[in-house]
Length: 82
Image (tube, rainbow, N blue to C red):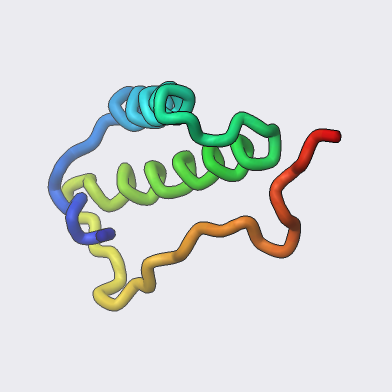
């Protein structure tokens, strides 16, 4: 996935807009709106899009065997309001 962004020349404003659009779509498709989920979701979008931005610039050379991280909740389960 990392290599798909090579030489795409993503601009910072494009990255920011992409994150905003995905956040809006999360509501449209009914993803959970609890704070823990949304915080983790947006953090993942920010993290991944910043990697894409860096790897899209001319001359970028990401490691050839960079592992693709998997997103998850970690140790804590999703928040359940009472």
